[in-house]
Image (cartoon, rainbow, N blue to C red; front, side, top):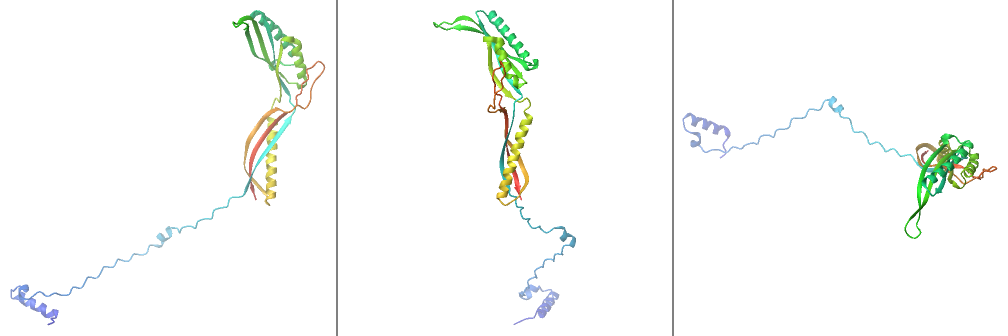
Amino acid sequence: MHLSRRPVAAAVVSLLALGVPALAAAPALALPVRPAPLARPAPTAPAPASDRSSSPAPAPSPALAQAPATVTVTGEGSASAPPDVAVVDAGVETSAKTSQSALDAQNRAAAALLAAVRAQGVAERDIHTRGVTLTPLHDYTGGAPRLTGYQAAQSFTVKVREVARTGAVLQAVTDAAGDAARVDSVVFDVSDPAPLQARAREAAHADARAKAEQYARLSGRRLGALVSLSEDASTYPRPASPAGETSGAGATPVAPGEIRAGATVTAVYELD
């Protein structure tokens, strides 16, 4: 039979009043238990406006800038000039039975050479001794070496600052020292190579720009700013092919030619 909750509760109270344990007087009744409601999470308070504004929105990725078109060219240039100085390597060489005799003969020949060079107008600062040697001479006929004498030599470097007088200086050397005279080399040069080298660089730069302008025109573009410029090679001024001879009465003929310098550059230009 169905019992309401109110009479059961009243019966339990009456039994307790009479001192009878309630559990002994009546069977335990199973009462339906309702599950406790689940706790709802507390609503999160909205962040203050100041906090929301402190976190900036991510900026959109900027588009990559397109690299400008460029043209790379190589320019070559050269410059030439007549030489203004000649460097003569000359000397004397003598032989004798004894070392002292060889040195004495060498001294006389060297003194005559120097006197002749000075007479041609060469300044003292432009004459210097390159070396002095005294060498024993041997005869190796028959196997065992046999001393036959000595050879003495002295060499000089003579700088002739009047190129037109180079032949005359050479002739004076050979006339003064006779059979003892030796001429090792004659080199023509410029006393200051910097201006000639600068002209070669200017020519190389102009050549590179002219090529770049042509490529820009062929591409339907205009030549823009210079991006980079580097020098690839620089040729020190050196004698070029002989252009003619300089000679006079009683002078050794010489051909000074020209002195030429070169330069090579690499240039990068923008194309507009």
